[in-house]
Image 1 (cartoon, helix red, strand yellow):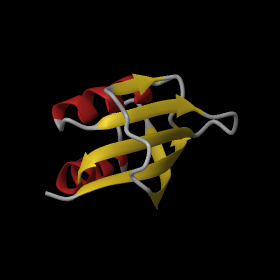
Image 2 (cartoon, one colour):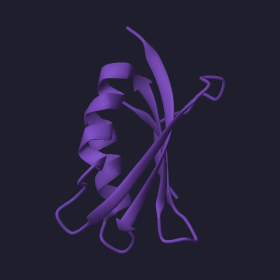
Image 3 (cartoon, one colour):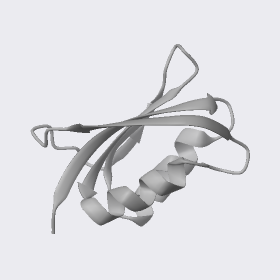
Amino acid sequence: MTQRTVEVRVEGRVQGVGFRQSTAYQTRQFGLTGYAENQADDSVKIVLQGESEAVDEVLQWLETGPPSATVTQVKTRELSDEQQWNGFLTR
């Protein structure tokens, strides 16, 4: 079982449409930790931490997000596992 941490930036119509709350629900289904927060540029920044396969599942979901969202771009970068998250926060 491989652990990984990724930072994701989701762009499009992703604020004011329940994107962070839906993301939190998805992460809890897969046992991931981290956070989701709105950014000043109207994107959503997400940090996912957990089993590699579970991270991949949520990354795939983020490509479309909830029905009320319109995702135009998803940027992902790997992070070190130094920071350990407890639960998933919506900021």
